[in-house]
Image (cartoon, rainbow, N blue to C red; front, side, top):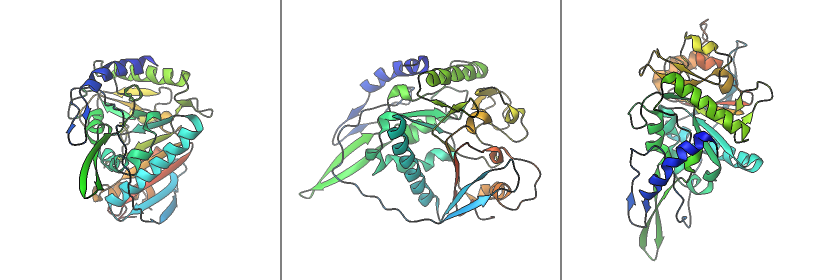
Length: 333
């Protein structure tokens, strides 16, 4: 186990003692705990899932440095979330079979909400969560229980998420509660006791240990860590991770993880993966919902004449890029 995983896993023992799962009552995990992990206790006897076929539109950017990828447009954010869950679950199955691990990078914001279908049937029970390794593409340098923490957002809405399954037998309803059983040592939060610069250096060191131990692949093309999938959101200004329009960090070519102390969006202090790491990914999903982002989507994918290259237009992975848009976000295409 790597140094970073050991540091994180040390907190999981106290967490386990505070988790109780029973047929009729669920005691939620406490926010003060830095990690979430639990073993799946009991499995439902049946489950159901409906999926509506969505048409896939392809787009090719006109500028060489902009994105080339598949664009999927959904009637609603709900349908988007259903498709995103299937996309992620399919990749999980693929990589767990191929390399016995699945490295997943998430961002904050509305992306976490869109992952909610993963913790519902059928995926809560079918995904091999024990092989997941979860990372953050960026993080605010605040305590883990701070409202601005991307970790806390993921913890509350995803990592500690439980579902209630009603099993009907002989007309009696039985309540079963489960939580996703990602091992504590596979959830890589930043060290929030450090400064922004120290936290970035520490996270990069953590990644280097994981590369050496073959948990994270290395790109033969770029020499940077190669994650199986990055699930990214986009800000209304076109920023991804904590890489903002016009900021010098968008041009960083050497570091794996760097820091920002003058973020245009509070809080000021953050750490972030750099574009060489982002673009070394095998797969990237860009998830964008809401009419408030329609102008930026149009600038990125439509026939906009703007000469200013947005950070989101610099996302160009070694593998496949898929845009997940709801109808509102795509309304100006």
